[in-house]
Image 1 (spheres, one colour):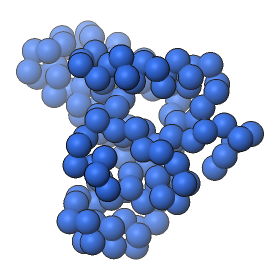
Image 2: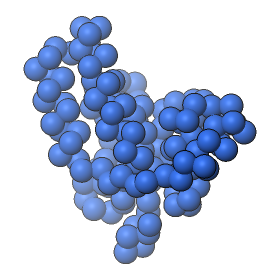
Image 3: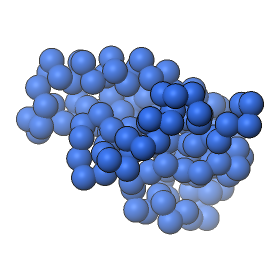
Image 4: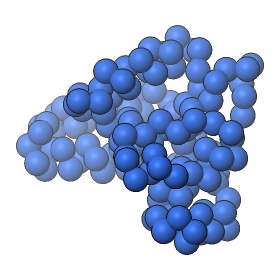
Length: 130
């Protein structure tokens, strides 16, 4: 999925939430978002990303890190980023999940990264190692 020879990056929820919720990884994420917003790179993810980010924002609200108004605003900001999604092969997901002993959720990011020959942007140490 090399759009006009732009670099393609698969993004996961830990990366997106670092950008949205501002934490110790936010500055690293900001560098990539600057490139993304300048249309110099492409972000892609399995559709699962949207559910994981929404759930992460809800969890941040439940733990009082943010309030419900902020949660709604951050979800709108995330949706406006319009991260492209791509269908991932289920057989490959299951194979990677068994082989690497990881969840099918994490395997979907690994499989997509491999199929696109892309780099995975994640702050999940376990996922990064695959």
